[in-house]
Length: 181
Image 1 (cartoon, rainbow, N blue to C red):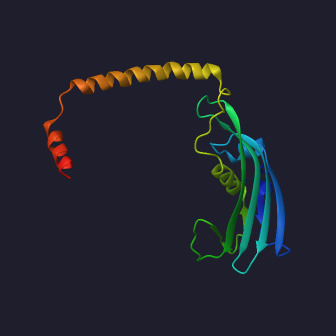
Image 2 (image 1 turned 135 degrees about the vertical axis):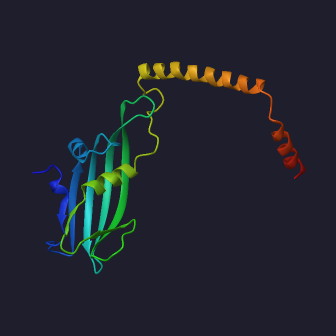
Image 3 (image 1 turned 90 degrees about the vertical axis):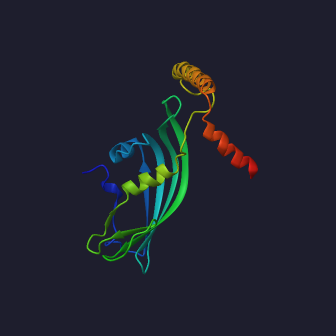
């Protein structure tokens, strides 16, 4: 049995017009999905599925915390995630997809929500994620600051070189045009 089999929902054999599924996304889930951003976590998901005329409406209520590497020191850190996402599923062969609509062929009504769950969690992770002040790995910060000093010296030398070079006279002509406006 595949580790992600429990995230497959058979829409065709849904006995009622609505159903509710509860999932626990743990380190094993994130490892099985093989995503690159989130290393692990403890996330609870309640999936409310409702059958309607067009197809199905899936409401994902997601809450928990995920483990990601700190952008500054590369040590693991936890970030809280909480969101509610709605997804429409249509079973049709000629329907066009958009951002919030998933199209399943009429003869294939088993939907794997594992990757969808992973994407919804990843969307809640901020673009930059760093530890609070004082929580980063001190050895890594020391190494980083040693490299930053070197790059500051290099940029200072580049500024001095640019001051020593003569300015192209065409720039002076362009400045006159700007001054006249």
